[in-house]
Image 1 (cartoon, one colour):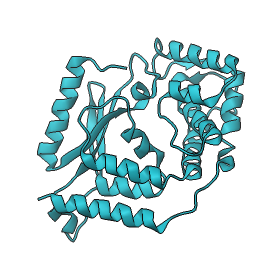
Image 2 (tube, helix red, strand yellow):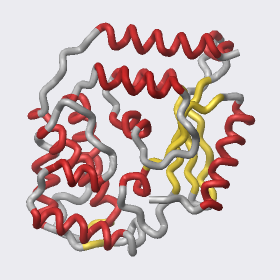
Image 3 (tube, rainbow, N blue to C red):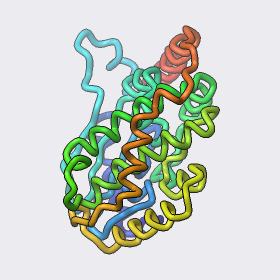
Length: 261
């Protein structure tokens, strides 16, 4: 998935504006959402996500500075990001979102070297069960309003349940590493029946020509796949927690903060 040059320039300009207006330095800027996940619609937003670090003095203030930066959606560009301290805290809780940002196939800035260090740290302490539980929560939230209803469902909501379900399936098959974020890569690693693969590919093609909120007919085989996998997060083995994980994450943050003026 490529981003049109004019859109990319606008996004890069807005990222530079964030740095100037908020007094931060960006460490990572990527595309998340359906464009990076492999199933965009014609009216999909550009879900621009970033990590940033503040000047050291901000972390020493008595009153904590807000740890997110958000901008209103303008011209389908949705721009927001997390402070690196918040991101590292979520990393310790096995938040899969951060892992996906680091592995996004669409980038808007070259990643700061600290991102590679963070990814290496995450991989060494990767807890597959923690990731599976997070994906199960995401998937259950997505299906809460429609799985028990036999009617049509918004195409966007269907994929928001399917992708976490496939991530759990991939983790069950290979708990040694983080699952990919892109739907097509998940399918390749999920060992799906050919009929399920064909149906998903058909849905992806349909979504490419359908509004995000456009309704589609349900597919019983895909419904069953989603419902089954979202109950199987507990089948993914857990990795015992390590005190070293938090110690190393704290050291990474302190090293980075020391570099900021």
